[in-house]
Image (cartoon, rainbow, N blue to C red):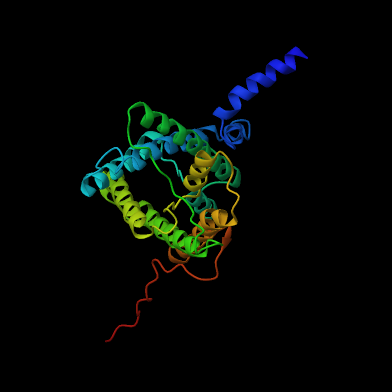
Length: 280
C-alpha cells in the first residue's frame, strides 16, 4: 500500500496548515455551479483586508495615540470595503440582508462561508507577518465564562451592539444622501460608529461579528469552540439581534421581512391627510 502511505504522509503535512472548517469554507465558493463565486470572493478578500486593516490600529499603528488608532481604523474600514468590493464581512449583517430580501438564502450562506474562510486564513497570515517583522501579535474577541457560564451578559452586550451597528448601516446607506461624496462620507461615519460601538460594548471582546469570534477561537486553540456560551453570545444573540433590527427597519421604512409584509408600519412617510375643506 505505498500509495496510501504516500497520501497519508502528504495529509499529515498539509492538515496542520488548514484550520478546522477551512476546506468547507473554500468548497462553498462553488455552490450553485459557481453562481455566487464573486460574492464569496468579495467576502473572503474583504475579510482578509478588514482584519488586517482594522485590528492593526493600536497594535501596529497608533500604539500611543488614540486619535491615530481611530483614524487608522476608519481608513481600514473604508479600504477593506472599497478594495473588497463592498462585502458584508459579518454573518450578522448577512442575516439581516437575507431577512430583508437583499440576498437569497444560498447567497447568504456562501457569503458567510467566504467570510469564515477569510477569517481562518487571516489570523495565521497576520501572525506570520507579526513574527517576521517583530510586531505585536494581533488579538481577537474571546468569551470569558467567568461569572457568565451561559454567556447571558456577553450575549446581551453583543445583541445590543449588533442592533446599533445595523441601524447605523441602514441609516447611512439607505436613509441619508450625501451627494457626490456619499460613499466616502457614509463609510467614514460607519467606521467611526463601529469604533464607538467597540469601545462602548467590550463585554464579549467585543466581536459584533460571529465570524471574528469563531475564527479567532479556532486559530488560538486549533479546534471548534466547545462551550455553549460561545455560540449563544456570538451566533444566536447576534442573529436574533439582526432579525430584530430588520424588523425595526421594516416597521420604519416598509418592505418585507422574510418575504412577508408586516401588519404594522411603515412609519416613514406617514403624514396627516390635508384638510380639503377650506374656509370661505
